[in-house]
Length: 197
Image (cartoon, rainbow, N blue to C red; front, side, top):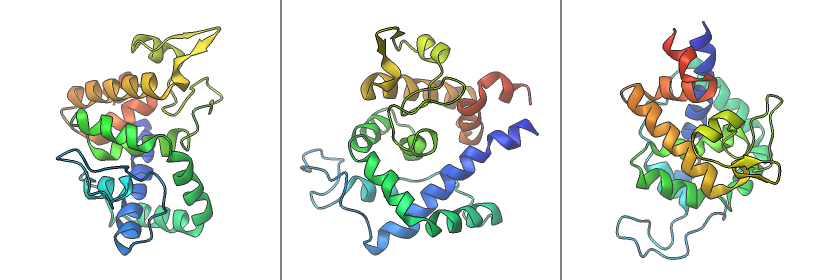
């Protein structure tokens, strides 16, 4: 039962991915997160936004026909102001995160995790003490090499926290043989709770 609850974050990720797929092809992408140039050979065209590029690479099974996912997409689209506010907040971060996801050969969907975890607010802090874009717990951050002390919290640093979170996702993807439902559930609740299911 716990595993089913933990996979709910994946369903939210899936609905976000589906929303990108439903919204962006019709040209309604907000003018945020634009690429400056298209110098990289595998990169986007100069007139293409990071959202265009990312939406083309969403390859996980998003369960788009699921009743639950369809209901969540309707909820999200009903509050488009909030949705676009989150996308606007993503502007300073999404390009870097997306390029790091690509560089590691991870699913593009992982670049969207901060939407769920923090709404792209690096100062977000949960009641349990998770902090930053990726909502890393102090112990997890320390294990992943992110410095956290009285004067500095690397979980709020884009580069340090992204490097740590993606290294963790890489490990989880390997642990669960590329089964990203389980890797995402483990990111949310800890690998021990998923392994015990």
